Amino acid sequence: MTIETTTAEQTDPLKSVADAMKDAVNQATEDAARAKERISQMGPEIAHSTSRFAYTTSYMISYGIVYAAVFVAKSVPQENPVVEGFIDGGRAALDAVNEAKGIKPDVGNSMPA
Image (cartoon, rainbow, N blue to C red; front, side, top):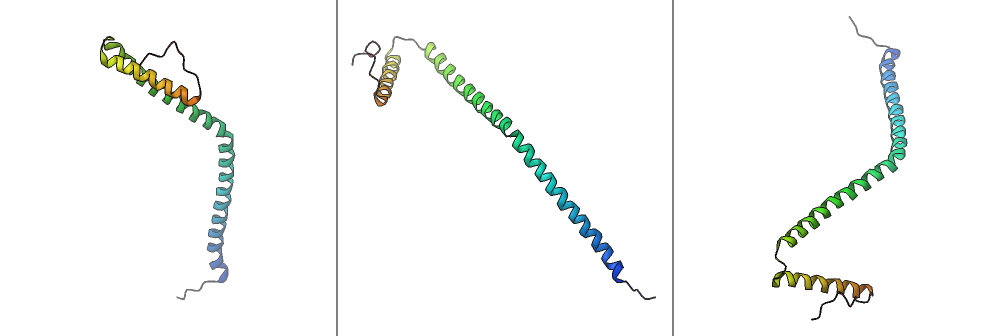
């Protein structure tokens, strides 16, 4: 028994593999084009969601820090040198920032040295 294959029999399997690969490439190209279109449509939504996430995260962090600082500041007695030092240091920092920005100091709020 001799195994003989003809040229037509050899090209059929290769042709079907080539056709399958061609179909796969065409499908991948179409899918990529559709994905690109969806992403371009979703761009503003993604930007809005990212912006909203950044805002909410920043808000929560700053709220937690400020709330904790105010809670601690209110729980410490006001008439002691530590609190007075914090108040004076805070006012000096505000004056330095205002001076750097070119804003004239508010005479009513500054404490004498």
